[in-house]
Amino acid sequence: MAAALASSRCCRCCCSRLSPPPLPARGRRSLARCALSGEKRNSFSWKECAISVALSVGLITGAPTLGWSAHASPLQPVLPDVSVLISGPPIKDPGALLRYALPIDNKAIREVQKPLEDITDSLKVAGVRALDSVERNVRQASRTLNNGRNLILAGLAESKRANGEELLNKLAVGLEELQRIVEDRNRDAVAPKQKELLQYVGTVEEDMVDGFPFEIPEEYSNMPLLKGRATVDMKVKIKDNPNLEDCVFRIVLDGYNAPVTAGNFIDLVERKFYDGMEIQRADGFVVQTGDPEGPTEGFTDPSTGKIRTIPLEIMVDGDKAPVYGETLEELGRYKAQTKLPFNAFGTMAMAREEFDDNSASSQVFWLLKESELTPSNANILDGRYAVFGYVTENEDYLADLKVGDIIESIQVVSGLDNLVNPSYKIVG
Image 1 (tube, rainbow, N blue to C red):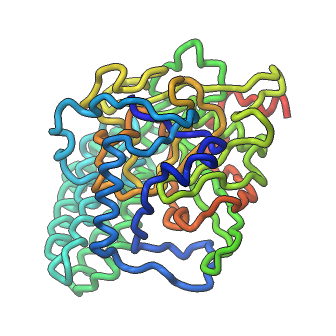
Image 2 (image 1 turned 135 degrees about the horizontal axis):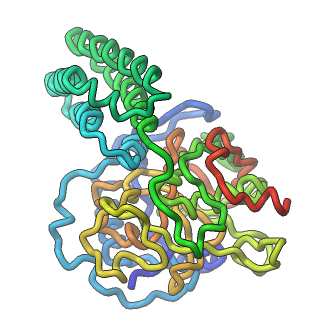
């Protein structure tokens, strides 16, 4: 069994001995809402590539010990069939992962979405040659939008039909504008326009979700639950870093696929549990926090005097509801694809004790890795830890955080109305 992600308390005593090599810096940098005094990122080098390969081997073999318990355990084979390893390039963009994770079944809008998402891969080709591929993507998206428009509108609730019409009109106009950008061979303008168009698509898809898609198991139904999505801003004060003073990370929490896990986190955010807390682990593999002062390693509910724990919660692609209390490996579902994979830089998940699947409480981590080298469901994380969100803005700056940096605040920006059974309202 693979070692589990640690409480920060254990990490502090064993990271120097067992932490993996640092990941290569990512080239893309968002400047929004982060104060910088200099630029320090370099392009990906062969040396960094070799380090990343070494890290990927560590992920698949379970070399780093990451559990609350500081000792490792023998590993069983992660995958009995290596076909999953070569299933294609992973989706790394957090926005794309969130769009594909929505519980909808409208083929027409997905056929518009896919060629727009594929522009990201098209732009990986050097020079203006990429624009030929982008042009094919744009034409395919335009054609499928025209052919499937009525089917897309039929998938919307009646109350949202007018807004859907407006969004599809904007999408059609935007596709024409993108076509002109390609014809003008203006490569730099493609990605911003692609992002704009995908935002229209994502909003239409969100408007297709009709209520909450499944029943929460009775034993968890009275816990704080996020029945939908929510967005939070996490403001971190950076210490002793000449390149970065402070930063606001925007995080989208997905309650459609992890309602118990996301609900627990939102409830703690509203209690101001994380405000003023230090970053407790930052080793190039993960950034982690959530271990309160004192002997306990989780959130003590003042109404009970006990640590509140939540079950392991994993949504599998194709399933109608998450599985609870067991890893996919323990269930023998080696080829199952998780709905929220550890693909994106800044994937957010819960830490837990190594030998207790249902021991997560308040400690959370953000993963720092290059997903091409550790593809979905072929690493030691997917199916073993509950992912419940992604950092969607300024995620690259997670790599700049250090132990001792302070979370000044985490605030809910939207989606608080999707939280049911909020315990923070009962006990402050």
